[in-house]
Image 1: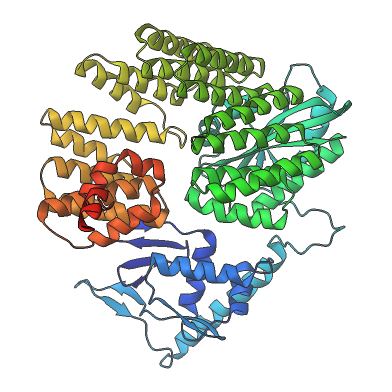
Image 2 (image 1 turned 90 degrees about the vertical axis):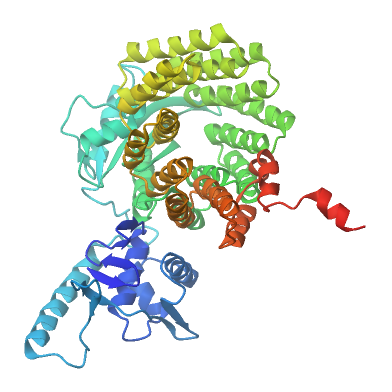
Length: 625
């Protein structure tokens, strides 16, 4: 372990810690930090960094600058010095261990070594030479010739055999596809696993199949579809790991072509850091790189647009959506023709342009009907229900969500069908329809039992029973049921929300120890410290509240968890206001102005004026006279 400033860095595992909390690094950042520290005696040129970190992969010099900037943001601007036209050099003193007094022991000067150290260095150098030489041949290179076969990684992908949508359909073709893929990928040794199980409960199934590995799961469904009056094969494929998934749609004239296309796609995604980065925000950079490599790839473009929409980057998302509309037409890809219209409808809804959004969503539904793909059309119907909810028209909400449930059932997607009834319950609740909100929620719960889905799917159901509860005891009982269910990345937001609300109940009941226990069970640092800050604030322990709020705020900024960062910026402004303390106030105000989107600002306008984030227009007008 190496020590510098308040940080500890494990060069073997490429893990960075500060005050015993891990600072997430991408694999590329870990390699770059290791190289800078190990080569701190001299200035590293961009070429040296590219050779050691990217090892033959074709990337621009701008990527070096971006990763250097990210490391400076995580550690310190003073950590890495730029030498114009020469390169970069590590500047901060490195130590190898902490002494009993808490100070660190520095490295010995490189000019004073004995024979034993020379021998050890020789052995290390020899091992490094062998490792680098071997790594050159094992590393997946991008600069293969145009006619070279795709280099597919062995033992990194576990194949759960692809299935046909209907039992007994496409038997020979499905077998041919799976046999071809098994030449390159590992086979699951658990025969009961199926593509259906992966699509129903991807994170739960992944945990069962690959409990201690970073392998990817690959599975999906094969169909035959008419495209311009010609029968083609369609592959709906899904790649899955413990953090996220990748789902795409490939048309081909033959099984051989289908196998080549999916293997090529998997190979390309494996070579990126898309499945390696710990934080979803960092996947945007990976998707932009993939898009620059193959700008006409509709699978990649779809994922990039969805990330940009999630980040409220509407202008760039809009440009890519227009690109997707053109490409899907030129490539005659029926599913992505519809998908592009659906994405445009979602963007317009976000911008409160509901009439325009409805036109694009209606067109998306028509195109998806032509593509004959009910699984995605079910999701488009849910978006149309959101338009009806804006108009508070429950009969139209019912029409679209009944249709969504029916489409999901036709596609054999029980989770999507259950979600349609859950949404009916939620919409009824918002419109104060007492009977309907319970009827639809019980229907969703019954379907869950019928399909024998795992407990993670019950979390959202119990959460809404808690919201509907008429007394504290019933509400608390359902909250506790939520916390008993299996946790996945998809339902983590429910788990945290319930922990937050249950902690408030415990504080009202004068049970601070139970509230603290809930916070300790949150394993994500930004949210955990956020909950501690809220608890200590309610307990009027201002110093502790501020300490945890600052920790949560800083972690959220580094990890781009904007909603946590914004909540903690407000919390810190409130704490400063109460204590008549101006320290870092401008930082919090600037962060809110730079990060928050207009809708968020509008819903909190009065509070933000009070905290000095937004100027009071009345006061401004008054000062003009």
